[in-house]
Image (tube, rainbow, N blue to C red; front, top):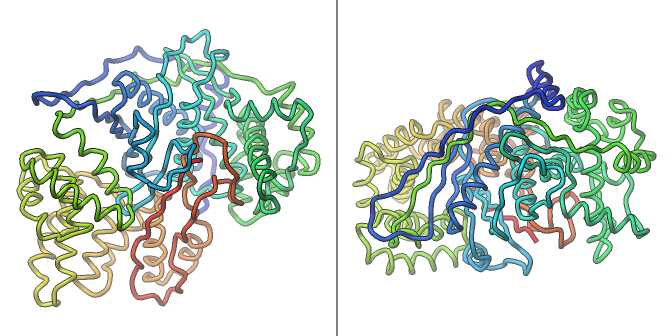
Length: 556
């Protein structure tokens, strides 16, 4: 894989404009509103913008503010990563914004007491589940640098920034940079025409106050930049050290991103680490900071030089958001469908199949109910039972990629159960559905994975086109475990062991969407959660990709 950290003049110029407050926001445009014409409405709505799709039962005003904030944040992140961000087709990030924390138990029954968000990386793509903790208030431009930070929005912003880095770049270390980057953008706030950058996130601020009272610290930057920052801690010491890791990572990111001259050297630092260099040595070589002395230097920087920039927002219209209001009968099935797409356990999946067979089965004319039931049948029951409804909807000219993909998967599952000579009609149906699904969503990793399955079933070995599609999807969705695994084995089929080993060695699962600093961290800086290997440990002699494994990470 080519090294991705070559600077571009455009990115540097854009960042310098931000720092110099030279950008002028254009006049805000109206939001686009779409409402279904059905009698009786549900509390559930769907909000879609350029980069995210949000399902929510929270108040519409809060959903709109959340989506608008994420779109503005996405725009800002693109400026800051323009010199090392991958280009290509992108699928939208799916989020479920819940108004009641108890609904999160329907997604993951093992939710810890303080868990308020969960990210699931499954074959259908990444999906985040967030809980609305408080109403979201608009902020006036002149109070952006001083107004209290909404803690829930800070954690959502941190999660989005971390997800963005994993999804759109090849940055996988050091963990301190990834966490510092995410925390740096956790404090970004947007007003009507201006934005504030560089504010201290609430959790980090509380830890600074704790240390300012004279409490003991546990880490220096040799630890923070090391491969296992918290490897020597356990119990309450691990909790304290984990918080300190966040704080020190934030200071480091603020130091680098808070000044234009240092931002221009960031690519050199990331390239050195990307090539296998020691992060502490790279910090010294690029920024002149010795790891043994960085603690004092960066502490002084925080107290004396760390500034909050209040600047004009990058130019562009107000993000457009298309709202769809759900009918009273369809709204209740949205969370069930999202849960089925979030790689549930067998017990969850089979339980949802039983429930939906009764409840959705009684509503044959409610599309949301039938979609959820069809997904449950394909994944946990009899795929043949899903074909009539999926086939009828897929015949419509406006059939969406989700229905077309699900229809293809049903046919592939049925084909896999048959002798090779009897598979033809099912494979042909899957091939036609996938072609249309790809036209609807060209960047879909799930479509690329299904095309790979089709190629294996049809020919016994993957076609070059299927391998190329997997690699193209991987290049624009680097946070996907299933695509990472398939990309490794695609390179193996192409007799390109160096690229296969590069992904296998460097790929990491995206950390949890972290809402509250309440628990210990593991060595990678992610909140403690089960971690699964992203790729098969078998060598390139493997004859076919291993099945995708579910990967879910709780916040805590």
